[in-house]
Length: 239
Image (cartoon, helix red, strand yellow):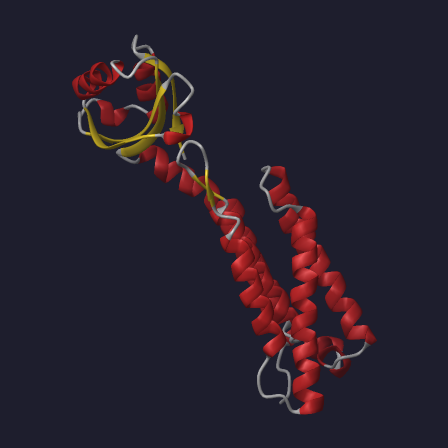
């Protein structure tokens, strides 16, 4: 089947075939994409950084390249190399999602980014240069541009969650009473077992802002007001 990819057509028929030239140019492209994404993740101190994305992307690209060879030269009817890579990446990325000691989910965005980059790299290996570059551009826009949009939406929400450390367990009732007087409804309150032997009473608390006056205030202002309570040792927003 003829490759209708715009970039492949511009480069020539060799770009759609499995040869030294196409392999080199695909390797350069996938490494550049992996470096850009890996630097973005490393800059924000995520577990999967530059080297992880480079290795993952190269492996996925060569899996796609191998599938093209097997399909064209040996009549294989299924891209089993890419399928195996996707299954392996799914297992690896699932294990990168963890709960922190503050009951916060960590690694979810990086996990999805790894999985998405694996697919984009395989698409490049198949010879779909344009689709791979468009997919990579969309991925980077989602990670960079929409992170600010997401933060803005969260800060304007009437719901927020905090990590709360009380000086004593007896202070819990004082905290609950004070929060309600402020105009906050406690939707959920969980004792954090990770701090069982610390001498502190540590909780994850989810609030809904119900007071009309409070809805004009930022989450930081509300947390600062709660932090001055005598029973509170430490409090910070989660997420």
